[in-house]
Length: 133
Image: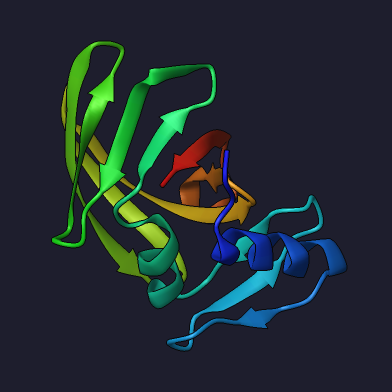
């Protein structure tokens, strides 16, 4: 799998434990576990809006975050839909299908082509994904 320049830069910043400013003013903050926390909407848009975000155990489970404030995909064979917004340094989503779920604001971080989210504003359970460009 070919790794994009953005992801290589992200991995390098995480490896040396620094904050990095991206074109457009987005900031990536290094996390202790090799992931770099996304703290700016511009950075989130650049790296995670558009690509397919997949379950590392089953690529049939995926979703796409769209730039119009929606998200869609397929999860366990069912259509997944919802809306999202950015609040401070958090991705806040509401699921509308396959079953409604209340808003959950999540902290997102990246390491190469891997994404990790932490629910409940960075204090809850984690989930790992693979970002497919």
